[in-house]
Image (cartoon, rainbow, N blue to C red; front, side, top):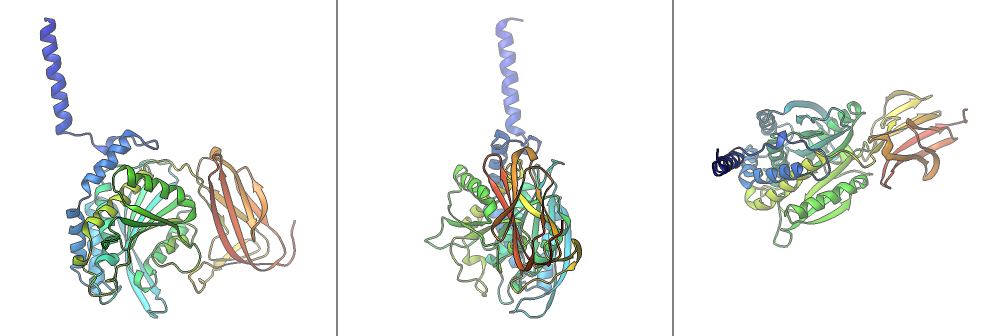
Length: 437
């Protein structure tokens, strides 16, 4: 075989392989996705952006709004929930419903029943200590078709679930749609209660989308990004994604309050010490809670961009190891009564839905940290703002054994070796009449 003939054969093979790569592009779910900024993750994010388009989102939104006003407990709300469940099942997610019954808020002083819809995309890393939740509420007020409040958030959840389910990620993602939001965050409260009781071995970060599809002439490039203090690092990463992938929002980043009554379903996570990022449109929608909250009064290209940003942010955090400290108080449990260090029974929430914890006698405070122990420098324990103990080795705990007749605030702060910190706190009514050895 002459050199010229070998050259011709080799060139034909190369051209053939290149043609195959164009016809059969590399599937992102076959790509290992480790590392903070790998080429494989970049490819995956670009494919996600390509697949989330206005037509996909409007399809989900139109279906949802077609049910009409979706007040919790009505047939329309039930049918909307069933529709979401069918969609999750069609995406091959692990799909379930959570039935709840609860008393409403002061504006709705009566009993309500409903159900939450959960679609889970399991992570491929069996050792993962992080789970993500992306939520929105599918109910509306009685008079409103609820296109923006919160059909926009539900459409984003469905679009993200549809596209992200085509890929694999290291960490588990739960796509969750709540009812009962308009009556006092009832559905998300039931979910938060369940999550706190069943996920002691996981760090939880919640993404909440409640009204992400409206803009006016002055805010078409504005988007609000409000998060709890311990995920400020993640909001910084989202800002970088926004710039790098040309979503091009001007992001208004603020810290979510972790005390008092919250205005959306993020509060049902925050009150347990879970971290949350709330995504809100850049301007107040004047059509909310009215018959004019329709698709015609929304900015659909804007909704497409907000959905893209949330989706690629989910993909980014779901494919990266948890390297920042994440700590919460593992024991005592929030919302319980303790006597002699033993858990007795649940305590009713306070007037602002805050978790109340009552402790008689001394008790040990246990802190759980969810990253590699080698990345933790120390864990500090505070009472009423004063440092009580520093622990440098797991298990991280502190004997609360001081004389007390009133409310105390207990805080734990974890320090990473690179200087990052994470904090969790608990307000307790602490009655301890004598110190014990």
